[in-house]
Image (tube, rainbow, N blue to C red; front, side, top):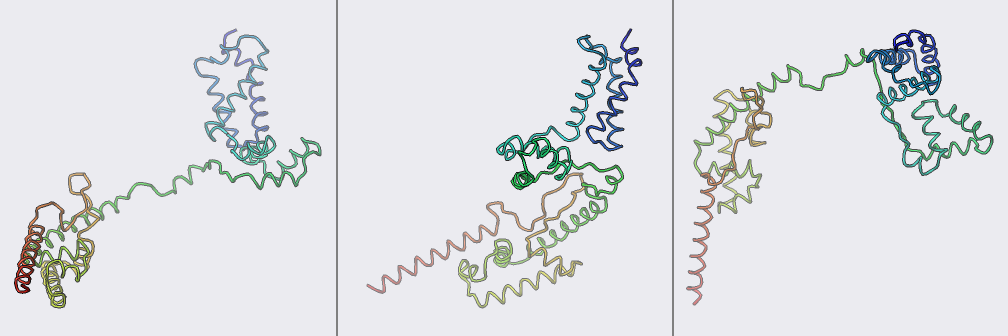
Length: 307
């Protein structure tokens, strides 16, 4: 008798064994159907190789029951993951491990688990003892399985095409506004551009800018107001709103740059670069050097007068 003939001869017994396992493990109707279908496919794999491995050291029925139970354990582990009791349950002892297994893994509920444990230990374990153990066990969550209908309604983790389109348009607008702002800054006097950079990008206060550039603070406020008004007028003349200007001056550029057009996401559009040796940095250095030299000359003249 070949393996396929053995399978056909014991097919009724296999179906009864599957029903017993499903009932004993409290599987729902969909779970039972999935498990039975998976087991039938497993039996047919490799031309009924399961029956070929039978060595005759027990009856065929005993061998098939063992195969069903081992396959159920693998099937359950694949769906739920391998069960391990918590560290707290292991510290509390075997009773706590059994209680956690019944409540979390087998989902029998606390009431049923309490009755099962009290009956198993025959009066040596009371309900109060079980409640005290349950209060010390950590909360645990099992994997949640949902139907295909619920998965269809879940939002996608990917960005929607509309959001990608608007992000791309925002990036194009950001680069255009930044280019216009850079052109407007280039038309300013060197020191005016430096003041804007120190105020917007570096976030310095007017008092700090005044001390750094050795400028009078009160007239500096009026000067900054005039420069900003000039920048706003130039940008509005090119079709940009006050919100564009406010975003540029507030953030020093745009964080949302979108798609550069070549399929790659470009870096955030910034108004100012921090490359060393720029004209503004050179102007700051020259200004500071001139002021230091002037302070040195003033100090020497004061010492001569004191003599």
